Amino acid sequence: MISAQRWLPLVLVVVLVAGYPLVRIQQRVDARLQNFRVEEQMLYLSSGEWVKRLALGYDGLLACLYWTRAVQHYGRERLGPKRYQLLYNLLDITTSLDPQLLLAYRYGAIFLTELPPSGPGRPDLAIKLLQKGIENNPDYWRFWYDLGFVYYRSLEDYQLASEAFLEGSQHPNANAWMKVMAAKIAAEGGDRQTARFLWQELYNSTDDPALRQNAFNHLRGLQVDDEVEYLQALLQRYRQQTGRRAESFQELVAAGWLREWPTDPTGHPYFLVAGEQILLHEESPIDTSEKGRRE
Image 1 (cartoon, rainbow, N blue to C red):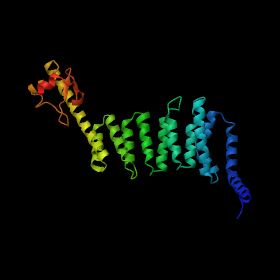
Image 2 (image 1 turned 180 degrees about the vertical axis):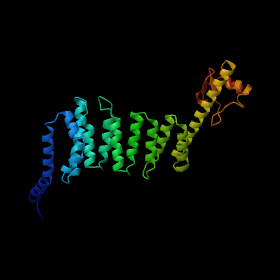
Image 3 (image 1 turned 45 degrees about the horizontal axis):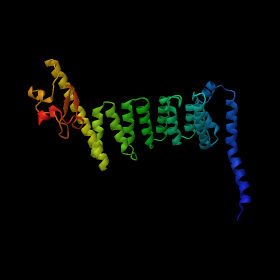
Image 4 (image 1 turned 90 degrees about the horizontal axis):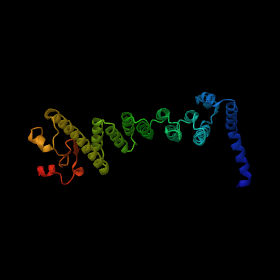
C-alpha cells in the first residue's frame, strides 16, 4: 500500500499541472482588465464567447470562477458605489461557460431585480438571463416560476406573470401550485375569465383534496365578484332612472328590478349599506333592518 506521504505530493503535482492553464488564463484576463476603466470593462466583458474559446476545455471551472466573481461584485457594490455595472456581464459570461449552472440564473435574477441601493433594479436583465436559462435548460420548470415572479413582483405585469406560471405548469415534473399561481395572478390582474378557466381546470384535474377545495373556493369567489359587479351596475341604473339611491334590495324587488332578494353561492343574502356598498353575509351588521325585512 502506498502511504499518504508518498502519494500526496503526486496528487499536488497533478492538480497543479491540470490547473496551470486555468491559472494562466485568469492571469491574462486580469492583466488585460487592469488597463480598462469600468465602462470599458463592460464592453470587454460583453460576451462570454471569447472567454469560452480561451478556456481550453476548463469551461466548468472557469464558470465557477466567474460565478464567484459575480457574487463578489454584487457584495462589493452593495457596500460601496452601488453601480453594479459589471453584474449582468459577469452572469452572462458564467452561464455562457456553463449553460447548466442553474443557480447562476436563479440567484443572478434575484440580484438583478433588487431595487437600489440593494441592487441595480434591472428586471429586464433578469428576464433576459432567465430566458437564456430556459433556452439552455428547457426541462427545468422552476425557471418559469422565477420568470413569473419577476413579471409579478418587479413589473406588476399580471398577464405575463400568469402566462409564465401557466407555461411552467405544463412541464411533467412541475408542482401543482404553478397552476394555482397562474390562476390567482390572472384574477388579481382583473382577468376573471382566464382565472375561472384555470381554477376549473385545476378542480377537474387534481386528486388532491386540499387543492380541489382551494380551487372550488376560488371559483365561488369569482362568482361572487361577478354577482356583486352586476348588482352594482343595477343599483347605478336604478339611481339614474329614479334620481335616488335604493335603500335596500327589497326596494328593487318591489319595483320589479329583481325577482327576489339576491344571495351568494352559499345561499346567504347580500346586504346593501348606504345605498351603494354591497356586503357579504359574514361582513354584514347582524342587526340590519334590511335583514329583518327579508325575514
